[in-house]
Image: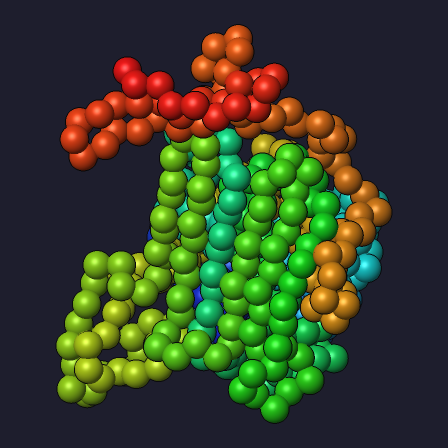
Length: 394
Ligand SMILES: NC(=O)c1ccc[n+]([C@@H]2O[C@H](COP(=O)([O-])OP(=O)(O)OC[C@H]3O[C@@H](n4cnc5c(N)ncnc54)[C@H](O)[C@@H]3O)[C@@H](O)[C@H]2O)c1
């Protein structure tokens, strides 16, 4: 497949590095940037045959099969409209929209045009998350009760992120979009997000948007998703996930301190994304584009286009994420649980997911089994009718 890149900034380079990392059959062939010198520099760096400062010109070319959107959040919708106009499959970076209304329009556009809309949610594709999501699907940790995802770093690298109008919000829309979707993957994308409770604050930076936020997302089956995001965290990029199930637990650290530690007096340069220092003890990352999920993500996207199927992360998922975040912004203001408003819901319609209680026998629930330091082994039971709680030695 031949790929055109829209944008030549930070994420465009990460994507290009990942697309060109291996001897891939999918080739980046062209780039659009509003600044022609930057377009040319990007084309030179990645040896692309075509560059332009006209989006229409890049997207409409006959040799382009797929377009990757790497533009600021406020430009995603117009770029998707351009791809729909020229009927080119489109892969859009996160967040899909600045809000659910924008995301819904983008979803409608790709569906009407009959093109694939892939949502470039890389952190769901980290090698660790992919393996952990499979472990959950295979039943290793039972039913997921709680999925927590944290992304915190010292703040974004470009001016437009800090401008509410262009970005649509602060750390919540920028980083929370990753965390919400990671939790959905663990809890089950077919389970409807019902309501949210959120705290958001502007703790450090002189901006209109929030630079920190914590949110709870309640799902129809009783599971809870939790996100913690911040642009105030010092010391690099903290990407951690925790999943608690009825039969097990998963803890993941995707980035900092993952087994590669280096000391430097500071003679070198780049260490890893958002690393704040290049001296002292440092935590580089082996293959950054792979460990951040970009490689697996693009493989899934191109496989889906080739086989006329859907990737793991679609525009529909991007829309659900935006809708959850919209509700979080409302809750942060109202300081109440707020409903997630979904115009389209394609998952389970069930309201009653049954109980998580384990039966011990016809009359009792099993609350807990316990082995004490003296070797005593006992069961704590609850009578199903009387509610009496008793202990039974075994
Ligand atoms: N992990 C991730 O998935 C990840 C990481 C970083 C950024 N992103 C997303 O990628 C997108 C771009 O972010 P970035 O970090 O590359 O930003 P950036 O500022 O580094 O690059 C933005 C690009 O858009 C261009 N641009 C800016 N304003 C424009 C305008 N008015 N018209 C045309 N082009 C314009 C810039 O010239 C540049 O090429 C955002 O949606 C961001 O949320 C995703």
